Every structure is written in C-alpha cells, then in structure tokens.
Image 1 (tube, one colour):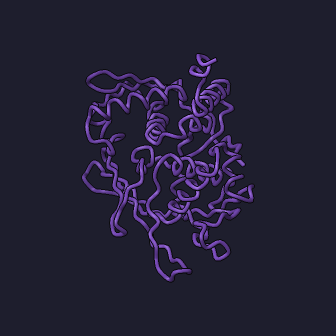
Image 2 (cartoon, rainbow, N blue to C red):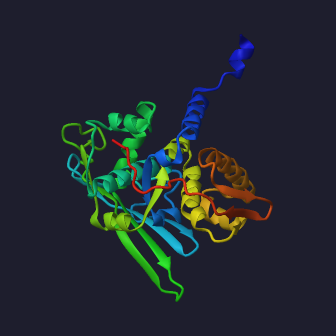
Image 3 (cartoon, helix red, strand yellow):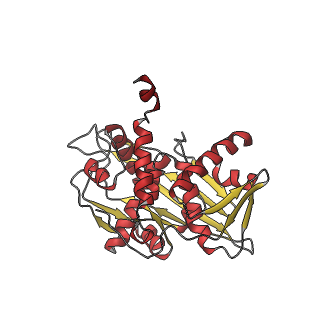
Length: 305
C-alpha cells in the first residue's frame, strides 16, 4: 500500500495530465481560441510581482521592441486618496487578458457582456481556477489590468521609433461602496479602451485555450508558447537564436545564465507537451526554430462563455 501511495501523482500532476490528454484528443480545428495583440508576442508582462515606485514603469526590451507598463492612480473614495495597485504580472494576467480579448473579438465590440454573475463562476467556466486563492489572484490581476497603461515602441530601420500608449481594461469599480474591503467589484460587462481595441482588431494573435490551460501556472512557458505561435508558422527558413538572445527575451528575471538554461529547458518541455506541432531544438550554442503548423488553423472559432 505504501509503495502505491508513493507512486501516486500529486493533485497538480493529475490535473496537468488530464489537461494534456484532453488537448491531445482535441482536433486542431476544434481548439478554442484566445487572443493577444501581436505586440505582446515580442515583449511580455513581468513574470513575478515587481515592487515599483508609483513614478516608475516596468520595462521589457527585446530586439527592436520595448514594452513600458505604467501604473495609473486609482481614487479610493473610502480613504479620499489615490492608490497604486501595481502592474499586472504572472500567468493569470496573461490568461485573463487572452480571454477578455477573445470575448471582445467574438462579440465584435470593445464593450463585452459576460455570461456569469460572479468572478468565480466566470473563472470556473473557462477552467482557470481550482479554488479561493486563485480567485483572489485573478481579482487582483484584473484590478491591475484595469489600472495599467501600456506602451509598446518599435525601432524602425531608419532609427526612428513608433509607439502608442494604451490603457487596457476599463469598466470595473475597484473600490465598491457595498463591499469596501473587497478589491474590484465584478460586473457583467467589461470595456476595453478604444486604442487597445483598435490594436487588437488590427493585429490579433490566436492562441489555443487547451494549450494555455496546460501552461496556466507558468508565465515563462506562456510567453515562449506565444512567441512560437507567432513566429513558427511564418518562417521561410530555420531561425537560430543564441542563448544570450533567448535570455534577453525570456530570462530578464534570472541573473545567471546557467540558471536560465535550466529553467528555459524545463519550460520548453512543458510547452512541447501542449504545442506538439512546434519544431524547435537547442544545443550549447543556442536554439533553432523551424516552420511549423500554427496552434490555431482556422480564424475566430470562439466557444467561450
């Protein structure tokens, strides 16, 4: 009996195994869609909570792209003061934004109707929560998304820079009078800023909800998956990136190269479990990426609540 107990998978491992099997048994044409703006396939939200002064911005640079995230002050009517909640981070912020984007594109409007009377029920419908702690995390990330201003800049070949500043999500009451101790009152509608909505419509990147559920606890794996979903299907010839370049893109939160290599190899294996069509390899010099089928073949097949 003890031997069987030792071999028994943890609850987390069992859950991930079920998600992998469900994804494997789902035909590519039947995958449910999430979406990200293409700009967020080049530069990414922080992977962990970054403690910033209200005047500071989070910055991530990758090649010719640079992401800035600034905190917008939120007035708290109970204290009479402005508060800074922090910038969005981690896997929950990525997944929630992907779901919100998909609903907006599905409904064809920046004003999104949500078919769930509470945040827990909404998260349960999309399979992104297992309990109260994750619900609190999701609530916090939605509040951060609604009080953040993002700016993605791109350096052109002539040296000039193009950029645009976009608030993301609006429409939440962050300090509800009816529940003053509860950050963010859930509403059955969400509003995207017009600038962000315009960018999303012009350059949407489709991702698979089945794949992202497998990666839902790992922000770096989600970023690598997003990168692959954008780059691989359009490659004309193999793409080689050195370890230094990979660390610039995916390892800004890790100091030593040796530590990054261990983590990146581990996360790449998880991504390969989800996105099995992805063709990539690595050696001591760097990473090679080859043309692969995109995780989403058909356009705008949305089955979310």
